[in-house]
Length: 76
Ligand SMILES: [Zn+2]
Image 1 (cartoon, rainbow, N blue to C red):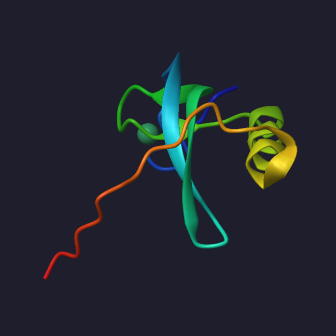
Image 2: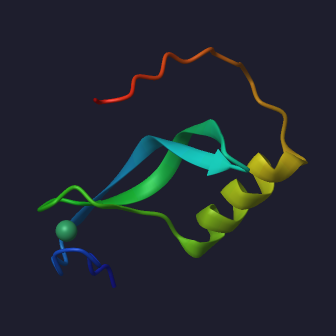
């Protein structure tokens, strides 16, 4: 059963999200990840299988479908 590990709500919706990961200091984006999203606080939870698949993908098992340059600002 679903239980949000941030707010404890048991209500979720299934959706797809884009998520940024940092691999050896380099940001990578994975699009269209199936996630359970807490309806109360918006926390995204990935299943163990999903997490494992992402880990393998970003560590070289899959080729990126596209590459973008990113503008980074320092808040100062
Ligand atoms: Zn929550």
